[in-house]
Length: 277
Ligand SMILES: [Fe+2]
Image 1: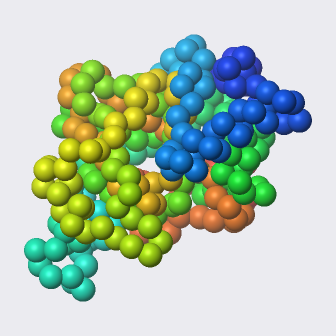
Image 2: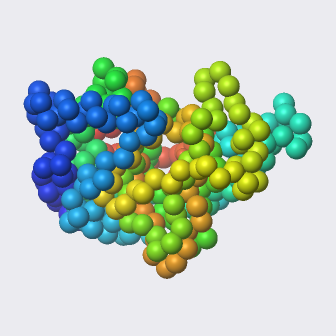
Image 3: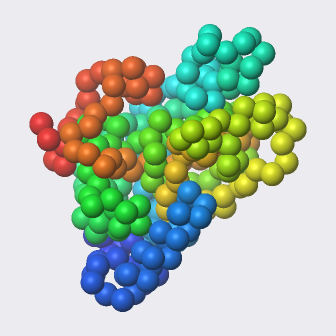
């Protein structure tokens, strides 16, 4: 249990995001929005202060005892299969994802992760970078905040996200592997480059990019159009990364299918006060 205040959590010297009228705030948003427009991702290193990272990693470690094991095969579009394509088509190729998931309902109500997620300036800052009039917390007691727990041999296979964007904070890196890797330029709203996708899945494509997401860094990532994966984790140290889920509309919840796949339960253990009941 941490009971951290927000100024103990967020690096407000480097990221002055409380006063959204200040010139420093507006310059920061402009810079981040430019990065996001150019790369479909932007990395904010040291966004969380070291002591808070340690407290959040400790919370993650405690609650991961009751995490759910998710181990499944999917194609890069997160389908089980797609029979509209020929058998040897890259769209039929299956990747494995094996990791444990902690749901929001398992987190401490006054812990660092929930405190950060409830903090209004974060929501406004993310909205301003992405250019939405507002963003809304996910109205899902399990999916609003999640932690991916990855131990030796775990990985997240190549895929495109369902969501247009995700917001992640690295809490603890593995000793080796567990790298966040992506390939830009393969997908747009009107085109899918299946030939290059095939090369990536074969391991013959050389121009992938690795994001140096170190503990405390926040990553804003447009994963719907960027093929990405997390490489095999190696070593005894568990990799913990949390996703803070925001949407451009209020009232969105996870489907029963997603609940089954990632949390292994339909009913939450606990409902935090930021979720409408
Ligand atoms: Fe993803």
